[in-house]
Amino acid sequence: MKLRPARTMRYINSQAWSRYSVKKPRKNYVKALPHTSLLIFRMGVEKNDYDIVLTLNTDQYIQLRSNAIESARLVANKHLERNLPGQYFFRIVTFPHMVIREKKRATGAGADRLSQGMSMSFGRPVSVAARIRKGKPILEVRLKEANRNIGKEALHRAAAKLSGSYSIVTSEYKVANNNVTK
Image 1 (cartoon, rainbow, N blue to C red):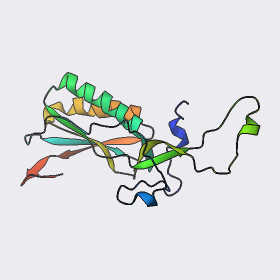
Image 2 (cartoon, rainbow, N blue to C red):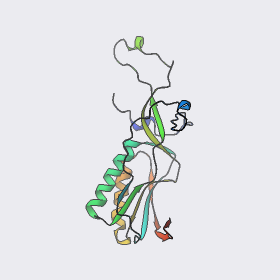
Image 3 (cartoon, rainbow, N blue to C red):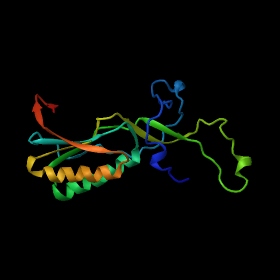
Image 4 (tube, rainbow, N blue to C red):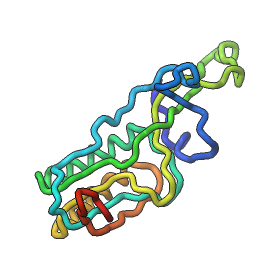
């Protein structure tokens, strides 16, 4: 079955009822966790001599599937690696925890006899998503001040792959006792 469009699940209308617990497996609402497309969270070279941090922040409450965040990661990392090889550090800040369920429906002739309607409509887990609050970062790029425009372009390309509206925020990068502060 094809993947449903992002517009069907991008907005957060209610609380999450999907739960997957490793410590208490009997308390799970979801018995098996679906596969996530997002596997790599840190790219580039992690150094202490970067000047600025660029973050892609969301302007609304939104829910993003793991495959959307993965496509944004791919396009941003490809642009950074092509233009600044070894001169940046790029990471994904959010992690997709929310399990998305879908009630499979039969379509076509005679489907009304096969479909169960809303009875037993909990649905099966199909993917995972990240619930992100307004103003929270999704992606972060650390680089030198001279490469600011390349980093902004990479985050702009990544925002084009995600649904919703986003803003790019610039801050200074400081390292104090191996703890990063912004």
